[in-house]
Image (cartoon, rainbow, N blue to C red; front, side, top):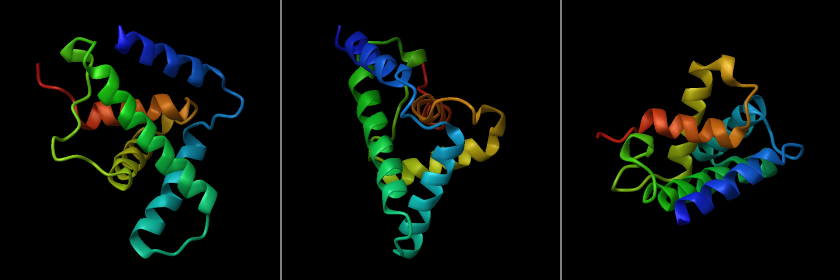
Length: 122
C-alpha cells in the first residue's frame, strides 16, 4: 500500500508540470552541482540546490517504493549508499547519453537514470 501511495504522490507532483523542469534544465542544474562538487566554487546556488534536492527526493522515493513492487521494477541503489553528488553524476551521464529524452520531466528522467545504472538482479 505504501508503494502505491508513494507512486501516486510522485505522479501527482510530476503531473503538476508548470513549475517542473525538463531534462535540458536538469542537465544544466546538475552540471552546476557537479562543478561545485569538483571545485567548491559557487556560481549558481539555486541550480545546485534544485539538482541536489531532486536527487535526494528521488532516492528517498526509490527506497520507500521498492518494498511494494516486483523486483524487476525496482531500482537497487548500492548498499553502501550513494550521495546526492554521485546521483547527480549518474543522471548527467544518462542525460548526455540519451539526448532524445531531454524533453521529458526531470523526475522521470532521474528515475530512469538510476534504474538504468542500478537495476535489480532478479
